[in-house]
Image (tube, rainbow, N blue to C red):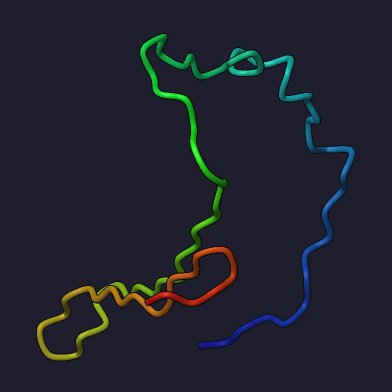
Amino acid sequence: MVFDPTEPENDEASFEQQDWKDTVYGECKEEIPSNAPEPRGYGFKMRAFVDSDHAGDSIIRRSRTGFFIIFLNNAPIY
């Protein structure tokens, strides 16, 4: 295999730029049901970092997925 380390020249004028609000999905909003309970407590952010490997098992060529770390408000919990 031979890899070409040079980057292709991209002309920004050739790409069509469009504002997201001008598309069909621009005004898409989720409606909250009227019987939904009021939120209580503080909000939080949960992030998960995973790794996957397509056909990585060299013997049976199965794909593998592994969970590495899960954060809750920037604190690792798993």
